[in-house]
Image: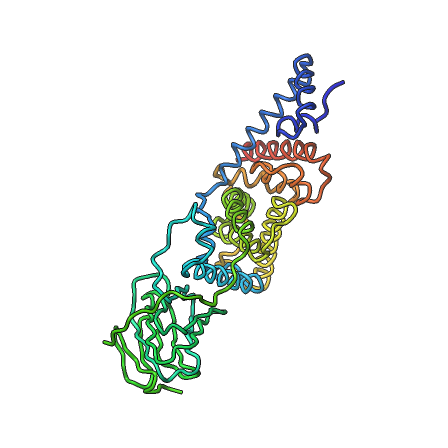
Length: 235
Length: 185
């Protein structure tokens, strides 16, 4: 009995069980008709694969790290999908921050295939600035100081404070708790579109593209700036 | 400038990472499937930038899902197919709403018209491919990326027992259409 098309295709694509494959190959050896059909099917497969290559463009490199840095292109992926993607990218960015954190278990997960990140400062955090990042110093927010400088890095680095200072990240905002009389050090990437530092609801400092401004102090320039939170800023 | 000493490391309140097993599997899936999905989307849509965006979108969705689907290959294919279909529909709708003058200048159709590049080899191949029903195109393109019959059946919505027969038919139609397009050149 001759082999049907389904079986020949399955043989071609390695979709038969070992026993079925052995049986069919034995049959093909003694059946010129089926052997011819199989050769024809194999030839068609080769022709098809070869022709499809004419449609190909160079493929980009994808890996988990690339995806975590992804910025969806607004003109291409819109609406709900875009909002979802932005959220996911932010999540991945935050995961990156978690990766960079001291004692982070993420490094153990990825250690085998990912290069070690830049050294994380003690008591600090690194965050992807995204399109806009707010660093909010929570009450009491009028006792300490903030040291701001522009850096060539990709991530915003926030460090310093006191032993009781803690950082949390949520939806494009870093909250700094327990700064007290400590000095917070913020290094902002030159390429970050917008990073704002707020003490409670007061704006203390903003970097918008290349413009740096310390609110209420008339300070502008390339920095670094040392801002006393006690001096107050623009409400 | 104020000088201060950085305090010692301490616990920080950061987001909770996903579990180790998922993260490891996710990385492996990106490595195994991203190029295949990109090539499928590029061939099916004819727009490499869109293919790149949609490939990323597929994996972002998987990451957000936070757990592996039962049939991972089929899940990835299905999401990729749906994203491409939605994008094509949106573009078609947008084109319908445009004035004829704007539509003429818009870069909008992810699937170039067979006529627009009919002289080139890629134009001939695309013209031949476009003569097949979408389901057969998907079967051919996904099988070319090595996806298993089980995954194809689930993603495309056909009986697994007939995948080989459908593939043979689609291949034959595609090759015949290509020869016709070539002779008509």
